[in-house]
Length: 243
Picture (spheres, helix red, strand yellow):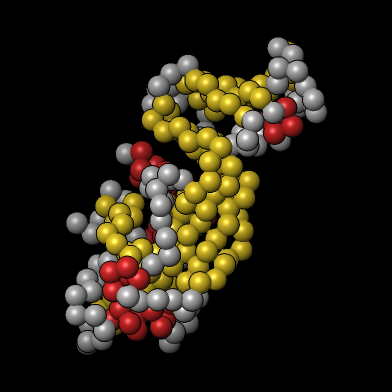
């Protein structure tokens, strides 16, 4: 499995949305539209920029993520001695994470804020009126922004990550906090530390009905009544590329 697909599976499992790829560093906005390729969303444009369709913006409940691949070993140090807990004000505090398996992941963010499109049905009505709207295109209706994130993927087994700096943050395993530095003994596939940005995306699409017209498919985690306009799907059910 490719790294983007691996990351997408982690985000689906823990946040029940689709991965923003690349995470943190890519600029995703509400109203972005695109396709699914290699298991992740690929942006083509924005419905406001390209089609002058506006929407009402809101916010969702905050979340968090704390994922470490199976087989990882976490060791805490204070004053060069291994300790069960790093005390406040410890000298030479460090956290070491060793991954026994190749292609492992560390994904942490203590706070994830959520921006949403509140009037999805009205937006769908406008989209279905466009002559040049492709039914395969997905639209971002929620952006999950991770704060103080650390996202690392390894390439080889035996990779060690060494975090040093702020003893208080290290003691709470807030490894993406300001004042925490990261070093490694091997080349990494992905290394993002101490930054804020998009980590997950909620997507919907307007799908053609068999007997004409359009209906709205929300790719999310809730189930709507059969008579509702929004048909909700679990992210795990969307597995095929649009290409």
